[in-house]
Amino acid sequence: MTMTLLRGRLLSFRRAPQSFADADSYFYEDDGGLLIEDGLIVARGSYSDIKAAAPEDAIEIDHRPHLIMPGFIDMHLHFPQMQVIASYAANLLEWLNTYTFPEECRFVETAHAERIAVHFYDELIRHGTTTAVAYCSVHKTSADAFFAEAMRRGMCMVGGKVMMDRNAPQGLLDTPQMGYDETRQVISDWHGKGRNHVAITPRFAITSTPEQMEATAALAREFPDLHIQTHLSENHDEIKFTSELYPTAIDYTDIYARYGLLGKKSLFGHCIHLSDREADAMSDAGAVAVHCPTSNLFLGSGLFPLKALARREKPVRIGVATDIGGGSSYSMLRTMDEAYKIQQLLGERLNPLESYYLMTLGNAEALSLADRIGTLDPGTDADLVVLHAGATPAMALKLEVVKSLAEELFLMQTMGDDRAIAETYVAGKAAKSTLRTPAITA
Ligand code: GUN
Ligand code: ZN
Image (cartoon, rainbow, N blue to C red; front, side, top):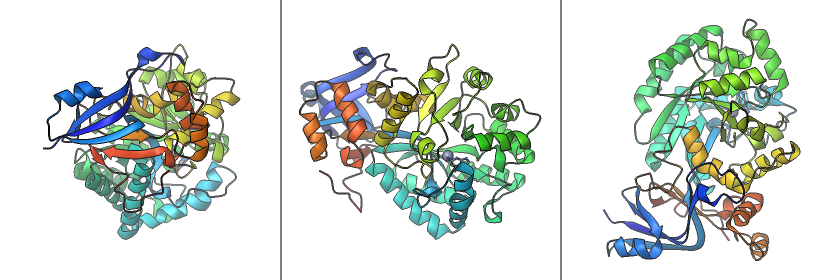
């Protein structure tokens, strides 16, 4: 197998940065070399050292002056909502009922699901995202299309067939037994195939009867290593309706806890309005709160207290995500720009090192997948993003006065989008420049 040698500036986090100047939290090489073989990173270091160690026939690709980082990870988005994005609604429940549920009904059609799956992965790659955690629709066909296309592209994906058996149109409902049987079938068809991971996916407590929650509890017991994903505490009307549906639960988080869904592999979208008791319960269980800033602003759901949750005596683990189609951008750069602004409004600071840590190693740790993705460490998968800080004329002008790596990262977070993604590598192969519908890049 021929090796590939990438040359460029290398950046990879070792741990969560403690401050704007925390240089020990990351590995940085100004003229770096990254050696790739068979989809894996085999060596990294200074270009001269890696070049000397590389075989003569290694294919060399020079990305200077761009920055090579681990590919971005998106911890929460909805595959069947590519045509829901940019829907005009007053709030979450109106948005779900008016646009989202009718659109998801279309995924009963295999041809539709397969067509959208192609666009889905094209869009992720265009934005530098190499791993994502997705909700499919209630239909098994949607999960089949989602995982088949991930496998064709060699991408590491987490996803699940949604389970929902009430409070939605008939075309979008399963039953406790169907949800259980079809989830088991999706696990047997796809989990561990290629780089696929199946997640147990009850949509949220509003759309699952107690009987269906029992079925998810059974799945969680039978498959304790699988991720579990659902929504929690996103919107005040949602919280009120949920407490009416589960009157004996202490609070929203307690509903999931009662069904054994609160654990280290549990990923809870939003978590904006948690009480102290709920945050303690999340922390004790090691569950992850997934922040979806563009969605929270777009739907007017609220301001996620990221810094406050992270610095509690009992800290809550945090991931970051686009939440397409409640979210308004596929770009993790745009996502972290909005995350920054939310913390500004809360009187907090989110420094750019933290943002880039969260998009890469932080999300990999939140997924318990940091041994495979999220860093440039030798032995891990060669999923990479190549970032171009001068991608637009306005960015190039600002770049003239940028004095540090942190400032350059902040510039890309503040002004960047898919144009700042010079290339995306999936398992060592250039994936953005080879898209069938390449975007115009500066
Ligand atoms: N809660 C339940 N379903 C959804 C969804 O599709 N999007 C968002 N943002 N919240 C939800
Ligand atoms: Zn969601």
